[in-house]
Image (cartoon, rainbow, N blue to C red; front, side, top):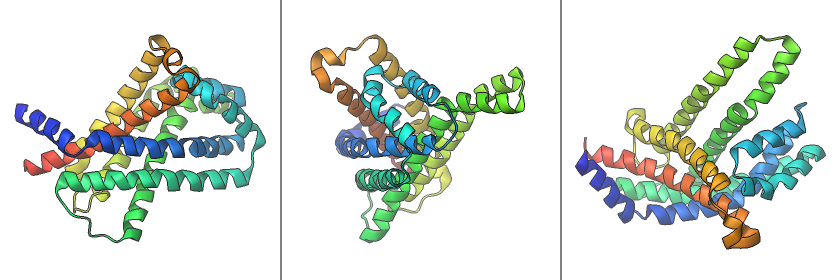
Length: 267
């Protein structure tokens, strides 16, 4: 175990995980606002209560980061432009897929392989990784943020009992974890230019899923209760918070691939 940890630390530095995480975080920032616009435009076409949606989002995001996008969210939900939804989706996929090109290069370096796929195939893999990551976020939003709102709406219409609502609150976390592990497994299997099976990439997928949840909740709690970014960064404090969170997410995703690569060398 000690040798494994030392190997991981060494690979973390040699493969420039922090630098790759910074690049991915930058591209995710460019994709974040189009993604929020797409998501909220999609929600705006439903009959869900707008105030409940905004309130639910405020509970899981750092307050400063939420304040940054609150006005945009409220406006998009009420306007419901289909053209805006399509354009924001295209911008999201293109911006984020550029970041996943860096992830692919990093994973190839971790496994010690050269990229032999053509540009189009690599770009398609990047886009699929982007869609998969977006699906993880959508699942988290649906189950952890909107899940209670939707269930209350259905319970009101169909008359579900309180026990069913309580059961749903418990199992929605299990559903999210299972979905995220499944998506990360596919990402780690097909992103590198190396033939891998699902067992080979499962440890990294589990690591990324659990740490994504823990780090996101811990960072939100820290920012809301202890940190005061506005004192240091002024009006751009909310952007710094968002960038910091996306950087941590990016490092987690890349390091999950590093774990798989290190374990593959031990077999």
